Image 1 (tube, rainbow, N blue to C red):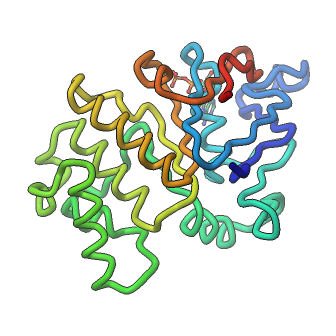
Image 2 (spheres, rainbow, N blue to C red):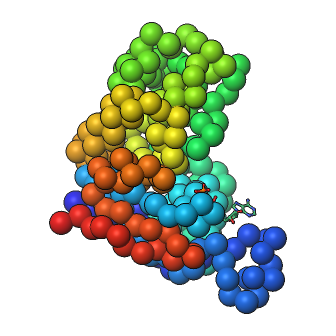
Length: 233
Ligand SMILES: Nc1ncnc2c1ncn2[C@@H]1O[C@H](COP(=O)(O)OP(=O)(O)OP(=O)(O)O)[C@@H](O)[C@H]1O
């Protein structure tokens, strides 16, 4: 399967680490990573190792200080270096789905409206699609509920449905099972597998061994570097 998202030589240091930057210590150093369609890739590693930072860079939410991120494959590939906010937002919306660790749902909108927020197509089709996605994540009955009326795990699944509304080739999710019981976790892991089997690249940041166990490829983020732990055959 083709590589759908690539990081090349990516480095990142936050401003408060200015002194460390001068000494060449960053959150991420010279990270190369390619994620392929058809595969689930897990990023594991200790707390504070830089997993979320890497996911945000891959999701075009945070620019790297060095290196580059390329989205797409072959003639469709876009090098995102130097793109403005508008172009990045368009690329994100068209090609990437992102599930935030803290879900980022809008509290005043129903689950259905939250799922529809990034939808770029026709409204009528969108509502149908959003309902189908809520059903896919097991929340068909909750479409009209506000986030505040849903459990943490349910909100997380609404966020997943929202990430899928534009049918992205790449899905990035930060601790997607963080709030789920074992039964919901199994369902969600099955769903990630299905999404990968549909040809998508699925990238999960996780502390959960059950999640890394179902991944095709596992990388450990440690001391700013990416160490392959298990590769797809
Ligand atoms: N916006 C920011 N400003 C300054 N420092 C930051 C910022 N975001 C993250 N950091 C720091 O960068 C390091 C890596 O953070 P990151 O959230 O990427 O780690 P993580 O591996 O995802 O951790 P966890 O597993 O606990 O979520 C941490 O030391 C964190 O404090």
